[in-house]
Image 1 (cartoon, one colour):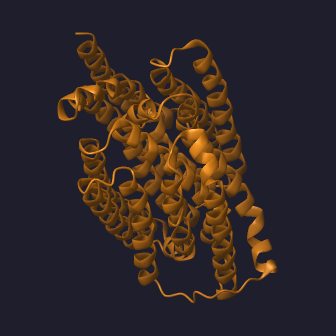
Image 2 (cartoon, one colour; image 1 turned 120 degrees about the horizontal axis):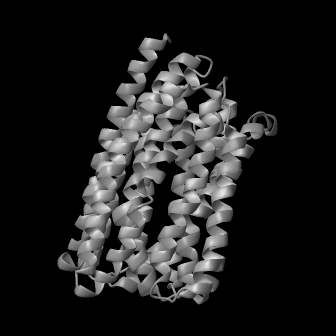
Length: 441
């Protein structure tokens, strides 16, 4: 595909995917905003623990083979059938392990074992979606993926809200997780034709293993980073405190993580097509980065003051989530920068991505040790938000340094990005300062 045509495809795929993702996130955001009307903070804490467990299981069951299928230069039925069989088996073992460990998890996190067991069944449906999802990304059919995500969000929201209204509490979220993954599997399977067959070739898996290993390690490190803060808060603090932190995160960082996840998929598949055309990649990277910092800054500037509506919309006890949300707002531009990971993989930076993921995880662990030693239980969630930002900053610096060197960015490229970033930073600082002022009044 010629460079201009590919750029047009990238832009179209990105706009379509991000547009549908915005609709999906709007629906999820409305659901997240409505759930505290029926669920107590402790029940929100239970759902945070459930999502930690299933998200880590999703990452393990993939073993990096889904991404490896996208990167592979050759594709054949024996190859993707082997991946399909392997991920189906690994996910089944994961479900069995979680069911067996449910009583232990109940003891550690005070979360009802039945919630964990119900949510675990979503893992199998996720594994069945890996191969068709990879095939769609290979063909740059991001519109189909976005439609899948949107319909999946409808299933999640409808299940969570309807069951919550009927008084099922945290069980409504566990059921919604299963419904979400089931519907996504059905939609993605109908979007592309492939021979789903249980058959495995060790030789075919070995062909992908070199690349998939680095992806698996990187994904696991990223998952540990994304879940460690909530995991530790769940271990040492009450479910209600975890509920405040989780709700603040859902209102601030989580929508950005979802949007950047969609963008990473587009950039990875698209930049892989032009990985030998440095000029095209350089031009795309500068344009993407300039808009990224500007939009992220405006978003923070608007969101930080809006967090003060939380105790007005919900009960007054939810006011404890406001300062946590303000602290997390400072990390949003850094979470936006995670889209660079998709570019890094496409241009041969999978090893550097592991270093990046490991560095932010190490900093987070060290920061958590400081937080749990020096801060009270009331201030721990706020301090955790600050530590989260410091940790991810190290990762962003490592990623940017690699990309700048790999693409041979010149001074005028950097200055163009810097000027736009300063405008976004001004918006962000104004919003955060206004929010802190409102908090102290």
